[in-house]
Image (cartoon, rainbow, N blue to C red; front, top):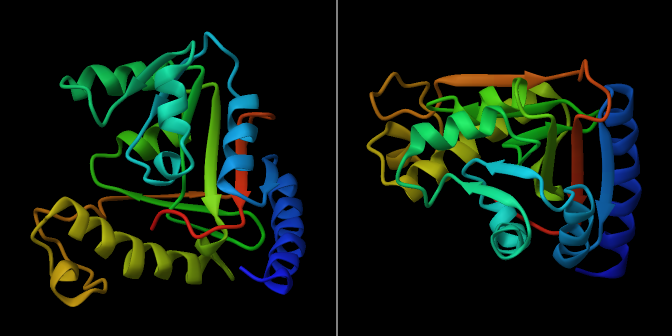
Length: 209
């Protein structure tokens, strides 16, 4: 990424961080995945009870591996055989890590889920959320963010999961009611009632879907 693009993204991130602050959420900016990892770990005290959903972004910055190797009570839902126990663990966790499907320039978070284990934890339960978001996921407004989540993130995830949905065949949302759909629950987080609960790390890299 050239210097001009990096400068633009840094300035743009400042606008997004101000939007998050207006919504009682805390934003940070990292130039690299390595910086993002350090920021995330600084937000997660050792000994914490930590849970996660199915985020590729937290894998890409090395956060999942760092928690596995560190002094944390870490529940990685993706590798645990008892998914229900992992979900119950998440609701009482100190920290829940993940990303978003999209977010707006002024700090609204958009997330789509199938079983709702992830969005329900985002909405209520864990004491703190640490969300890592590549700059590629920021959209102009709620309408644009929703379109990104449904027309890009969902079809990519359907391909990843090998599910039989119209979007997997067309590459874009068909507003389906397929039994395999993951577009079951849509969470729009426009404000955090609890100060210091939601922390969003913006990263100057293309991460996740």
